[in-house]
Every structure is written in C-alpha cells, then in structure tokens.
Image (cartoon, one colour):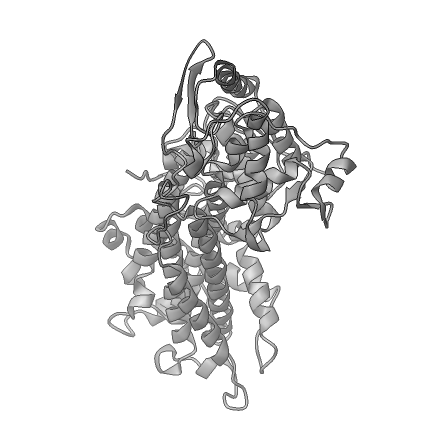
Length: 558
C-alpha cells in the first residue's frame, strides 16, 4: 500500500488541488505550528472580549436580525450550540462524501487565517472528521449562501445527526464512540464560526475545477476524433492563423488538435474536398479555448477565496491590542460569479459536442452510413443516443442560468443581498456531469465512425483514443443495449491516467506535461512551495506546454 499523502497548512497559500487531494483522494490534513498559533491568537482575543464585556456580534449578541440582543455568561456557549441546531434545517438528498469533505477542508483552511476565533479543540475535531473518514450527512438544499450546509457539518461535532463511517450511515454519536471520541463542547463564537463564511461554495468549486480541467483536455481529444471522422479541413487549425487571435486557451487547443491529428491519412486524403467545414467543426479552438480561459479565471477567483478570511466579525491584532470588525467577507459573490461563469463555459463544451455528434450520424453531411450502423432500417444504430445528448444539452442550458442574479431577502432585512453561491457551485457539478455524458456519447460515435475509415491511418493521438475505447466497448455490427456503452465511455473520460496515455502518444502537446512543478507555477504565477510533492506533481501533470520533452512554452493569463 502506498503511503497516504499529507497536506500541511503552513504559511503559503493552498491550491484547489490540495482540497481535491484531501476530499477525493483521502490525503491526511494537518496544521503547522504557525497555523495553530494563528488560531490560538484569535481565540485569545475572543476570551478578552468575553472578559471585558465589550459588545461583539456573534460573540455576545444574537445573530442576524437579533444582533442587538446582548448575551452573558453561560448564554455564550449555549448560543454556539443553539446556532448549529437551529441552522441545521436543510432538505434534499445528502451531498456525496467527497463534497462534504471538500467543504470541511476549505473551512479548516479558512480558520487557519487566524481571524475567526474558533477554539483549538473545534478545529482538532474537524481534522479528526477528515482524517478518520467520519463524514457528516449534509442535505444538499437549503442555503442562500452557506448556513444550513455548514450547520449540518457542525452538529456532527456535537454527536447530533448522521454520518457516513466505514461504508455505513449511522448516528454521529455512534461513529464518534467507535473512534474513542467525545462530542465537542463549544465556547463563545464557535457556533458562528462553524456556520459562517464561504468554505461551502469554495470547497465544492475546488472539486468542480478538477473535473472541468480534465473534461477540457478530453474535449480536445474527442473533438479531434469527430473532426477526423468528418474529414475536416485542417487549415482551420493552422498555427499562423490561430496565432492571429491570441487568446491563451485558443492557442492551447489549436496546438492540441494539430498534435492529436498529426500523421492522419484520413485528413491528408480529404484535403480540399470542401471549401470550409461547418462552424461546429472548424471552431473547436475558438470554443474550447474560450472555455479554458473561463476556467483559468474561475480558478483564480476560487483560490483567492480559499485563502481568504471570510468570517464575520473578523478579529485583528493581538489580545493586547485588537480590533473586532463587522463586515461582509462572508458574502460569496466572487465564488458565485465564478461558478456561474464556469457553468456557462462547460455547457458550451457540451453544446458544440452535441452539434458535432449530430453531424456524425447524418449521412447527408458525414458521408458515412446513416446512424453509423450497417443495414440501417433493420438497425436504428446511433439514432436515439443523439436524442439523449440533445436532452442533456437542453438541461444544461437551463442550469447555465446564473444563480447569483436570483436574489432574496432574509433575516428581517438584515441580510438583503445574497450570493446563492452554494447553489451556483452545486448546479455547476450538474452541468459537468451532463457535459461528461454528452462527450461520452460523442466519443462512442466518433469511434464508431472510425470503423468505416479503418483502411487509412488515423492521427497519432486520435488512434490511441479510439483503441482505448475499443478495449472497453466493441464496435457495433447491429443494434444492442447502448446504455452500458455510454457509461463505459463516460468512465474513460473520468480517467486522468488514460488522458495522459492519449496525449503522450503525441510529440508536441499543449495540455499534458510532467516536467515538474515549475510548469504549474509558470502557468498561473503561483508558487508551489509549502505544499506536498505529490500535490505539486499532480498540478504539474496538467500544466500547459507546447513541447512534452523540451523546454515548456507556457502562457500566462493577465
């Protein structure tokens, strides 16, 4: 068994990859001495506030519209407990474990800014939930920002509610007892700290970034296969032409397509058969590239939020000289807008894929057998899978409507502008799931189209992609149950290892490189120090470069 990766929160900023490593891959999360010192300093300020009787929101006052109600003595601890119990009122199906774990990880990162005032034992308890795989059951619906989702995590620390533990759903108290743990006793401000801030939408968005990045790489592969099967005119991807419109993502996609299609006899023999292709075929660099650029923007926004202090109030200074500041850092507008924008960008990946796959099954424009099957008529072939793709595409158009503009008023006019950031992040995940299925269908259809072109050599990358699918899904000679084939194709698109196999077949690739963490730093201007080697390696594996073996030519976003 390989050793468990460890992510240490220290002085440097963390990345979305660190959250994914913890949430999805089970990496162990720990805090450096300096991180603990920041937490302890803020908590000492809370103790000073309590001792002095100074009024501070959420420390010794009610919450929201009750902010002018003063509290004293044992009421402060009771407020923390009551805050979790009263706010844990979500509805709907529970979040997947990895999503809840991402939220907890992002929350801990937030607390290590040392501006919240949470007691050390509460942070230790959250770390224990992560590292011992005790995952609160969090209803997916009910937050206009984050409160109900965060409260359902918080009540697990009290031994209330249900958790996922060792493959079973059980009462939180039972899981804590199995690990020899006791429920946490909360102090002043602990309850507010546990429900406040943007870790919910931020943690969810970190997972979405991982899925979106992988999907954009696969989209280039699958799009290249359709382009080849439809015998596209390669001049549209000419390097000099692409360079005349210097959007960074477009340059990457153009380079990827040329590399994946390198050596294709199909395209060489098809040169000049038409003046130009339909836009869904010749605009792959422009459309896929725009999605990549929006992904880069969303990543910056979300990582800034991940490394921010997003509680209210925030505690500045030291116990000897401090300030307590009520403000609006918990407002998640930046993350909500980023998630909404990324949902639009990913929906467009699915939209153009649906247009390409429709052309593959139409003999009028493809020059291939109708619906990509021998003996059409007795066989319906790939007719209805295009309906499925169209349905998913239509659903994505609905989901791409911004959440952030759909605003409400809560808490007696005290909270009268809301981000809807958690809703934005959750619907982004649905858009990603749908786009994956659309591309999985296109992958199936492009591979089936290759069966009618096997007398000619395919591109170096597209040939590998075709053969990888054929290892899981045989070619179609007659109608058969298609749903399992779509599922198998979608599972391939979730594999980073197979993605690298495709790109490593190419000599000049913009999407994949493992030359080192330096490439990841050059890509986004960040520093990979203070993070685990494994996480840095993961980041580097998807850093953009135009030469897989040589000196990287990376791009920077402004």
